[in-house]
Length: 425
Image (cartoon, rainbow, N blue to C red; front, side):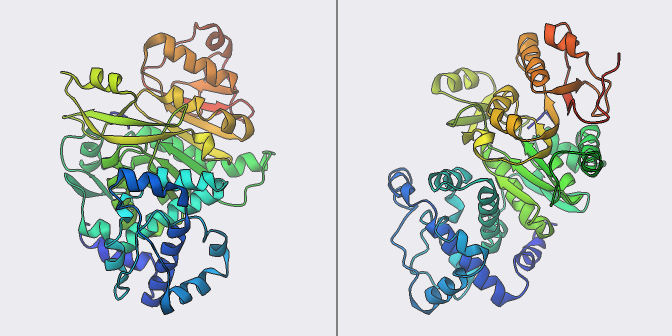
């Protein structure tokens, strides 16, 4: 979240979720059964906090239920059928029109944190997390909810081959994307795309793990999707993390408007940090999508009293290494001052898996915080540049002793064992 067309897509969205109407109904209804069986432990919590709307007694009975159970009993879906839907309340609704059935449920209230926490309680791992958030997104697209309820203060713009929803006013990133260049942070996006292309070369040079699928880009602080859609449109997989509710709504609309990207993108509607928490997101009135995560009532009061900042909603916060366990080609961090906490919450990931490149904002907290972040990245085995993934690189000795030049914006980090990453002497 750095300072960084419209109705037609409804029909395209439905085509993207199935094409054949019969297949669409069976597939999406099967997903509903999946969502039903995930996380029965959450029922008491949801009953208390959401006035009972999050759960009613659900029985997949009758011919439809038998058909769906038969459908789910075979194939990969059978591995997940006990893990997605006591979060939903789809009892006794007509199935004449699946979109109307879905719109009559509490589907829009289910959060990524609901899904992830329930999956964690069942002992599910990263691949299941990826599949579950994709199922969650597909259900929202199938339901037509994003066509019926467009986010306020939003407008679709073109970004490459994609139609992307941004804020119509009062947001710096959206203003750039809606402008004549239709871009934001062009240099950084180009650097990420270059780094994503290096995977095949690294593999040929003897990288440890043979890759069997497209490399993964992790977008922490996805905002309205300027990096997400550029990278996904280039053919790569993207795990996108965003905690601000209004930004999540825009991203979900954009994903529904671009069904050709559905198998490449996993949208995790949660913030990231050093520890699991529930926090607030605040922003000012001139840059509404630039959300800052603030935890604790007292800190929220200090951040919003006579500062021009307003609470925009709540955000779950989770450790990245509690969700993801896979090699990453590029990790991008732009989370308005909590980049260090996100890295601390990725410690296990960074030590057990390859994260080849890191692009991160490094401007908040003053010189001591910046040096701490540089030294942490050096200790994890990265060369650091203020200019790009090709260097020139800061002297590791100067980084370690705290005498290196400090960044004014983003820093570019490459693993020291990459062939091209050699610091200038």
